[in-house]
Image 1 (cartoon, rainbow, N blue to C red):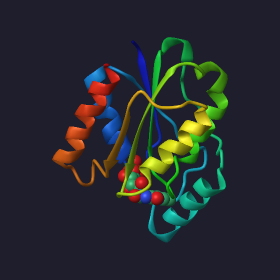
Image 2 (image 1 turned 135 degrees about the horizontal axis):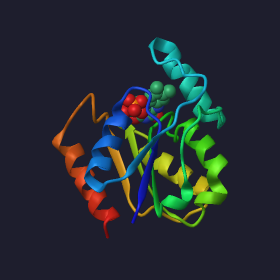
Image 3 (image 1 turned 90 degrees about the vertical axis):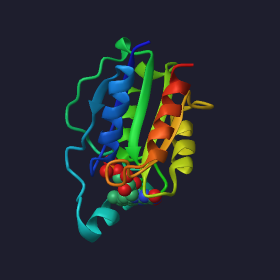
Image 4 (image 1 turned 180 degrees about the horizontal axis):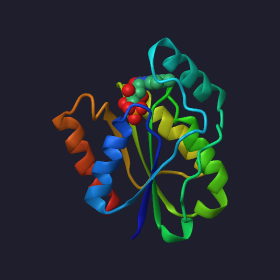
Length: 162
Ligand SMILES: Cc1cc2nc3c(=O)[nH]c(=O)nc-3n(C[C@H](O)[C@H](O)[C@H](O)COP(=O)(O)O)c2cc1C
């Protein structure tokens, strides 16, 4: 089974996890970035990103390479913003929905501790699916490495391989 990990990361935590998972399962990494970067410092960081997530924005993305036909499974990875999945992921899905419909989906989210489950529910509805093959919620895995995070990654990978 060929897998793509499609992810957005502002501060590197999601990227850290995406690379770790990709190394273990041999997935391709597809990093998406908005054309206009979100402010990543100070008060504006939470204000702009939070507002964009709550408003359901679909920001334009920088060009990326993604050939849906190559993949059976797509894993989405993102930081939780205001208990939601991040807007660049929404843009990606909107642009590729027809091509990815019917594939297997899994998800991982990084957060400071809250909102991952809610974001999974919202993503499920957006993808029009009943459930994910595997789900993973991590607490700032790069900034706060922990045994707990590592164990959760192990269990996510074993769910993916079922
Ligand atoms: C705009 C914004 C909104 C956020 N909202 C939440 C939230 O609702 N719950 C939470 O636990 N963490 C929240 N966070 C924290 C990030 O989800 C968390 O630090 C994550 O690990 C960052 O991943 P990254 O380094 O890949 O960007 C928010 C961060 C930002 C910038």
